[in-house]
Image (cartoon, rainbow, N blue to C red; front, side):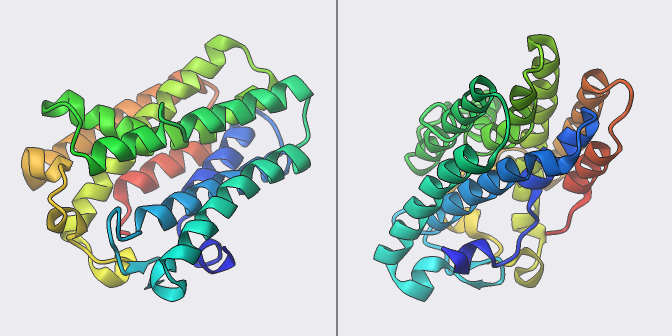
Length: 258
């Protein structure tokens, strides 16, 4: 568990939670437990995603994947343990009104369920998503977007924010998740193993549908630019007074090279 959790990475999901707290006028330290829980969940998903039954990848975050280092059986248990620890840590360490804390825990559970990450992973590995642009977007909204969305929405749920404010931030986070995946698909073609910390071309080797396979490299880049503009506009609607750190994260996701 420590091997995979402490291997590095961009920590985008916990940083999103901290930046959302700042945008809402709260000290980021107030949601540190939530931020940690988000990274625990994300790391569990990476361990299981790399397994031979899934993507069968050998490298993650610049080092051998968990199942390559410790065996497939230990890797499965490590992923299960991280997922359980995420909720134990959130419910034990995160301060807040009980009803608000339970709402955040429910949001995180839903984002990782068959209505979110697990459902999206099924559509991916079973090649069961609808054909065309809408099917591809739906797959990635579930697999990638829901956890990114929860990273933002949980902060508002913890403070008991109104539905209008929460929905505005959900729209921003939803588009941000799509942007992240489009850029990820582009980097799988254009990036280097060293920069990515994992083998490039993995999606093509596994015959996966990606934004590049559907639209070509230039088309995917155009989509990324359009998604970046939509996410930025949605952020202005969600935080009209400004949210500098969230703006920086949005720009980073668009321009990142790893």
